[in-house]
Image 1 (cartoon, rainbow, N blue to C red):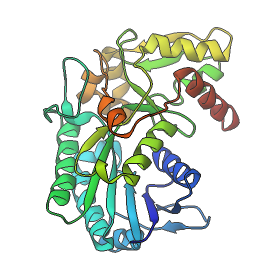
Image 2: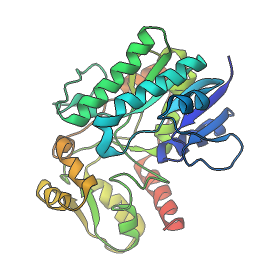
Image 3: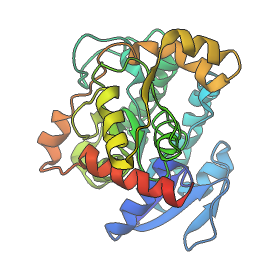
Length: 307
């Protein structure tokens, strides 16, 4: 089997981080995107089509699915997209690693573990559960080998299309109010992008990861106030830290479709939202994760350089 690792969605934040991690570990990498760069191994392909998916995955040992439809179009487009990717992976005889999230569980009481039922009733949670079933059913049918790595909201270098992006880091550097989406004093797991990538690549490398989902390792859960204070302390000055509550989300959602989409999953914002990653640590440890202080510093450096 080829030792080629293929990253779909390689120009997105997670995809870029996975490409960097794979190269750091010495793997041969093909970076695939509709708008891929012109570096060695880069490939322009539309993986929403059968032809594009087969071409993108050809010769791969492992395929990392880091691409996804636009947030507002998950319910309409994600299942068909996933079937196309699975077919491409199957044609290559490769393993699929899905960059996943925590939407499948819906509202929960207590820390989230991988054995919780997929009880989400909102459209995004239901479609993510459908996507996960498609992938694991293909694994169980021996069409492909597959594993899923789940992460919470992320931040880090290159993380601009995230609620922990410009409204936190760019705002702080500009001396503006740091906006945390949701209640300021509820604990929330947040993941540092390079740690997400490292977890996904470990799943790609390890056969014992196959056939199930895993919560990717992250630093300890923090409140919005604690995270905002970390940012503020490193920026200097006195940028204000404020929460964006449900009422303001509704108002802003009238003019901002991305903010509007957050309403269905507000349960992730108004109560503890904590992922238990102990299963991953037990299976693949020892695991080193980046402290929030170090992650915030690196993210601020990136926003300074790319502002």
